[in-house]
Image (cartoon, rainbow, N blue to C red; front, side, top):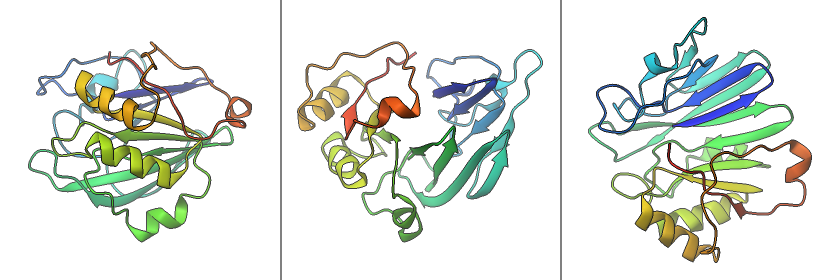
Length: 197
């Protein structure tokens, strides 16, 4: 689960559902983005809170909501029983975010490769078990060339391996990240680990 807030808009990526064994986080979101139809990632109901009911995106396509442009591209996952994953490119406040979801293959579809020009922030799964193994995740992150790389779908062992591969094994998880476009200008593949909530 990833939460992004900018201005008055909140986006929730891959919310954990009530049917999952994972820990749920409930908050109100304006946009809910689901990469894979699996209980670990499709808990859209937990993002309905108070007066907020999110606009839900669960498949490839092009969307524009509240000044946010979202493009979804079909890809593969080996996570659970579902082999369909959607990679999302989200543009907001002059920043481009790439959310790989539960991607399991290092071979990105050509439509995605063509769109990966200038990625500011990359969210990449590193946990293996149906997604990318940490060693391969590092190679893919380098090939994408994002300014900031944030691992998702990890445990203590996989994040340790990923950080070692990236030469950053002294990085410690942080609770939240606040960043603006100008903060990214001098970054080149910097890794940030967010604590699992």
